[in-house]
Image 1 (cartoon, rainbow, N blue to C red):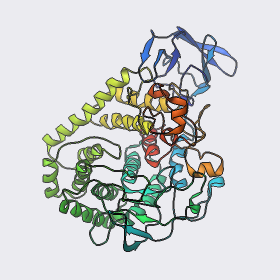
Image 2 (tube, one colour; image 1 turned 180 degrees about the vertical axis):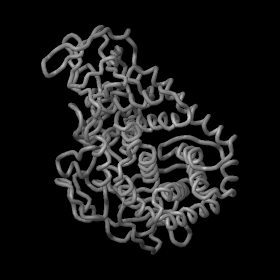
Image 3 (spheres, rainbow, N blue to C red; image 1 turned 135 degrees about the vertical axis):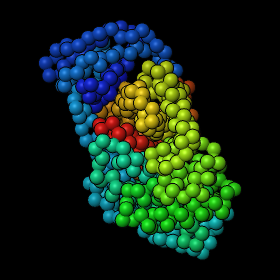
Length: 511
């Protein structure tokens, strides 16, 4: 593995360009690969310590060089992986990251090469109560996306994913037409998850436990169970349907009726407890004790869609919250209100301040890190999702606060994911010279080959009982706690809501 870390795909000519060198490298050269000619050289910055990786490194900038071509960086005997400078350095990356959602489709005959499979999970699902007992009700909830490396389908992360993809479509300078069809497949499933009688939304559908790691989806033959309605699922559902109504005018009535019924459930159950897996259910929980941020997002999305002043009154009394992850969803509410609601100027000002405060904090953290990202030492489960969500926060803040540093710093987060990190790993399968190849992802394990375009969870300093990390990473700095191993669910699983913010970055920045 090279100790010169750079984006393994490349850079656009006019974008900032930086690499990270070992402490011993005080000077560097940029070499054109076609004829081995040195085309640019310079001195690296003074040594700086990286808390996340435990290294002392130097930063080498070569932004002034803009000539298209294929290059490598060299410092003494150290040589980087090759990369290109081009108007389109990422090639098919954006399309392939989006194609992942099609490969995760459930309930259909999937034609996808070695990852093909017949229709799966088409049986009726048994509704459970909070004790884990069957209620006697069964329901068709076929369709949607498999959430991650397992085959469960969960409303809470589905809402995050759909929102990020739709915002990418809305804000991209050149939106991909396929996005609306991709998201609609998930929305149709989400609509099935609403309880007809109450308007509440079932939290998730899965079997009671995970299948073996080498099983394709049609081999998971356990009974499908629907876990009880939850406040977070219902509020997220209301928000997603209201948001989606803007993009699907022919289906607006259906989407808004579903959103309104879910919102009424939220109003009738202001103190609903947080979701916990019923006894005997061991699949992904997505538990969250607080639903205020999800309710805030729902209110903002519904007000943006309807202009209903009673909902506006709710927003005015609510505590402002931020966040783009499945547990903290407030930023989606801020963006809905600021971009699409005819609201209150004072409230809008406070929302902009909240978003700007988040962005300024991320900017400060990024400047302190030689890799240019905002995690500091907080590398938790799905750290690459946090990297991408933080980049998305910076880009959204830039809609209301014209700060060029937001855009440049967001791009540095993308470079990190594509190889400019302490492990020199490209965390997206099928891309770069040193890509993630062994994901914790059942179809990839069963086929013996990683699907392309999947975003790895990334370094996880918490270890979380992961036997592979415990064996190989115990005591290492958090940015180093990663294993490209199918058995490492804590660092190398994939998920739809890890791909979606990466897709947002690629679309927003027109990469």
